[in-house]
Image 1 (cartoon, rainbow, N blue to C red):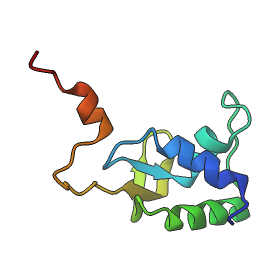
Image 2: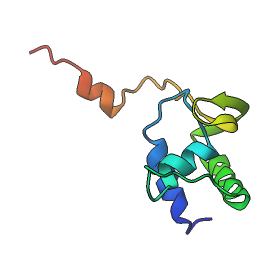
Image 3: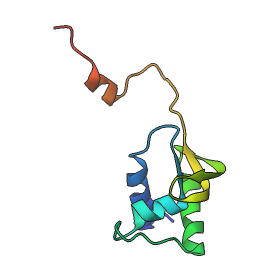
Length: 101
């Protein structure tokens, strides 16, 4: 799986998701892996299994069982984990700070 081009494409798409968001294999196939987003294709059994294995290895995502997702119906889903509050600010938070002078 390390040399699989789909890993990079999936990670790049998932970076647009916020903590607490859900995703499924069908969404990933449609939005991250489809060569033409105007004509998305549904994944086959083997591809679904491969994408599921990729998702199970991503540290920021956890399996969350079956649920209904808008546009995709009943699907096996993964939820983006909440980031623990370490007391340190992220780059985005630093960018949004107003300087006192």
